[in-house]
Length: 285
Image 1 (cartoon, helix red, strand yellow):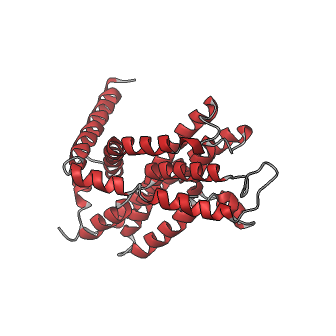
Image 2 (cartoon, rainbow, N blue to C red):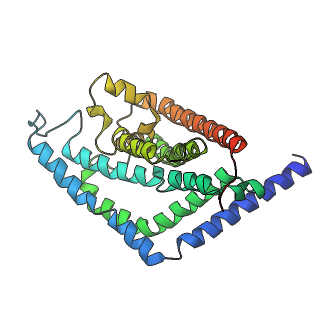
């Protein structure tokens, strides 16, 4: 590696670290409000457990003495819901798309054009800081919830290949979730208001990411279509990997598809940003 390339990379790493540190400090300014908002997100867990309990009360008991829906028993369903909640905590990016669109509309995007700071890189490391701050607060509640609900994880910890794949899928879910919402926000270069588009995305994402119910419950041909979409990798896929419901011979393939979707949206976000900047007119403050 030449001296010039090494110097540029050191400069980039230094800039990324500075952005991450400052964003993390900003997130922790209002610790009380941030902690309360984080803890309130755990309240729906009780509602979901009672909901699925009522559903399984209506399902006939099988030969093994347990009620099952598409291969999920009640314990599996609760474990699945807890894992999708964890997946969504990684992949959800509240306020990212609306923030990007607002900066474009109000002219604030100019600061990325006149300073040597990459907009997408800056926002990415700001989101990393947000997640670090979130989990610094949510780690204890998550630990308590999973400890109290450990009985629902009948299989215990997954085998090593599944555990490694689960961690990889969560990390890629974070990057993929960021890039998808960044692309939605970058539509603001072409549309003045994206709230309707964002509402449709959130609606479809909530159902088609598997957060509401396992995608195995979808009828054909809808299940086949949804299986080709990237949304399942935001919550459904990490959860089913942990529960070892993905066949071992398909595990590598599914991870590769998730990585390909991530690279595709990285290319799309970069392309949209470069083309949007070319047509951008800087009005506003």
